[in-house]
Image (cartoon, rainbow, N blue to C red; front, side, top):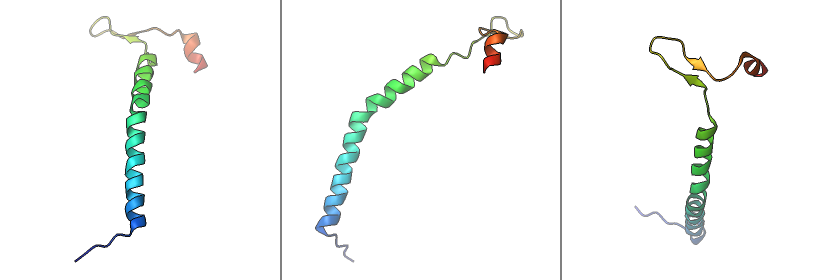
Amino acid sequence: MYIIFSRKTIAAVLSAAVIMTAVLVSGGGIWQNAAVSTAADANWGLSFQTEGAAPVGNASAEQLKKL
């Protein structure tokens, strides 16, 4: 059994591969920086200072009411 591809099909597949490679290579740093800045901004505000005791938060009741 033979599979016959036209020149247009081969050109389209190669073009898609080149574009996908270019996007992955150029865009990899963008996603990496976004993940780092998001992780740095995520302050859950809980401190477990003593085992068995309730955690201490860094937000006041007034700040939490706004959310």
